[in-house]
Image (cartoon, rainbow, N blue to C red; front, side, top):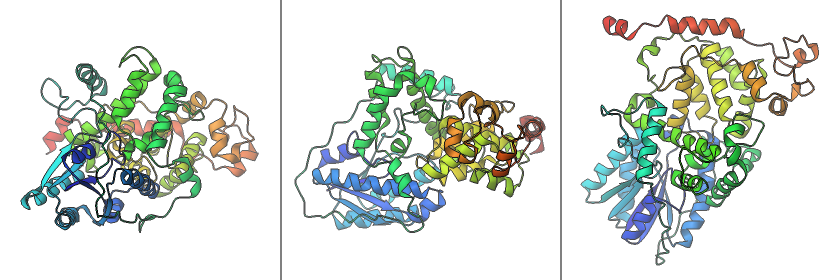
Length: 480
């Protein structure tokens, strides 16, 4: 008997561990409920609900293959080794299969599980699945992990041109067995159900993920490089939640893009090559997670930025969290996050720079808040994006690059359509006034809408001063 331990790979098609397990013999599947661990990781209620809804869909698909889906409770990952061992003994499992996950806690969990099972004579098999290339296989000439995306991308292109990862074949139905699937929970204690309006935005299942991929390729990809920056336009793939939960694989995405771009990575359709680069950004941050474990331990990648004098400003933080900063594009973006579990990528950068630079509030506060609300919350991508915006991470924006939210608003939401959608109290303002209603002196707007909580000019200078006054690496070494 074989067992596949499902984690962030909630699909049947192109699931490396599932296919491998089925090839070795009769297979069971298991999912571990770990609410205390998920709370510790700041996983969003809408993300946990998305997992459960996808498990419902996956259970149906597995049943067609006569693979029972079992549910076990391991409140924290420290309990996973013993819970899995007991399951293996119960069903006389000889081999356990699982796809690799990345992050300090994930790695520690998987090593502990493998050691515990191997000690009991049960073989474990791990597989590359949520990435195109194995961490550690793309290195600099000196043998280190890349810290600059453009160099990493070039190395990836060279490797992928030589050997493109293949799509796995679908497993065949096995003989039915006398093991029944467990009933699936509809909710997990500690995670409230999101509103139906949010759930409706993110239907579960592989079919939905494949439909979104095909729709993007057919309708949006050609103009992706020009349309992806405009939040009022449906110009992105809307696949991030499905990739994060493993409802679709990066291989499936890459093959779909290449098949519509004559097999080219860096020429041909600009929209498709730009989207392939976004897949590689996702890859880059997961490689960073493995190469530099400190970034998954709440530490800045650039050690000298640990000394930044972050402000303790709970009122400013609360205003940012609630979309009440008095800066319309910031508030629209934050309200989109609260209502949908998702935020447009351009705006993720804008609101992150506003928090970490204009408000000079520790980027970790923003990283945590995002994780607690994002349906596509992913440690590597979220941490990478926040540290990029805060100028504390790999390949970071130079500290003096500080997006002006008003300029960003006028450039990427010129007619104010996105702002009107999410900040309805400004809906009657014209396209000139809506980006900065208080400066216009519009009393109607100012009564309904808060004054800006910060002056953009002076706060920008405050951030520049904070970075310029950081000790150099040499000074830090001398002090230590």
